[in-house]
Length: 202
Image (cartoon, rainbow, N blue to C red):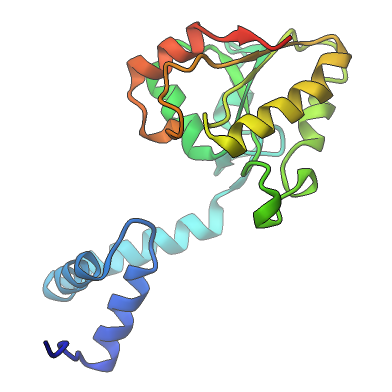
């Protein structure tokens, strides 16, 4: 079956949209034609929002989460319990746990997980600043909320070995999450149960 050929600019738009995670070629075509058929303001607002986000969003100097102010809203909130740090792989995981509304501690974002095959070692992750946060003795507990898959479990074990000698309690979220699942896709109740059922890593 012959594939439809589009004008150069349309093909480029479809190609760029198809590069986004979870967007296949058919979805990219639908999005492209939606943008082309919508009023010019729709495309302009989208382009402006992307440009603004790229210009102002950065990593929080304390926890590594995405933010437009530094420190981020969670780190700057004195009502949060700074003695409990929840370590996650990705900023999307912070958003997922925040939907649960039951966690009152703070976060630390690693920006990935250990994966030797992919060339991701401890140096590529936001680990040094986590250890620095534990230096003043104010942190009582570190919750390791990395994903329940091979890389997440390896990262949790690695971090536990680094943190436990510092005299800080280290817990791992309970596996109310299916093995291989990612936090960002879990519902609030499952995430809440996983945090409430966390267990200390011996």
